[in-house]
Image 1 (spheres, each protein chain N blue to C red):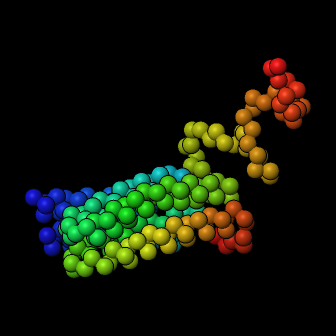
Image 2: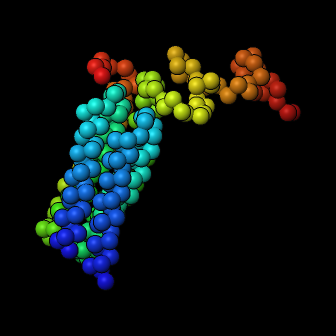
Image 3: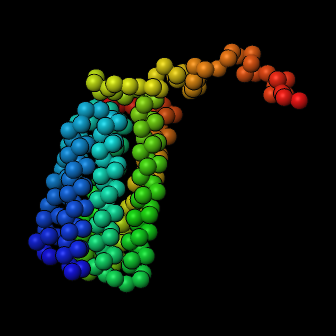
Length: 89
Length: 135
């Protein structure tokens, strides 16, 4: 089981690195917002795996809050984009 | 049995997340990137939460895990729709190989108005309904 957990954590860390590259080079602001949303999904997954690895079920609350915050952030960014705030990308 | 199932769920979930990140990295424009990330990342997080529910097996934890799954499945399409809409409206470029953009000929970027191209004319649209009514 620990091999599986290690493997999945490695995979998700690689995925985080790839998403970070997109966040860094992303040509426009919406691309970066998409990368940030992928971040939050992956962090929910990582928290789940860590909860399994450490047998701490309270970590699920953190995952819930993470998903909630990501949704709010996405809506906020989209409103900001459509209203046409100052952008530098 | 449950151990095997759990291991499989975790691995497949992590693999789907990796695929989502790969798609985000490799695909050419905003909409295709969102196509990669939204679905694959949702599926990956859901599978891992299923594994969490199987691992703990208590009512409170299973309920919370299923709640996370439900919440992710409810919010991911909404967030993707909103971001895609904003991205289209702020004019992010589509891939040069895009075959079809049905919104462009029907959409007025200044007034945010959609037209189907099938309207009779403006008079007919503005006339109250009962003028041409049946009885």
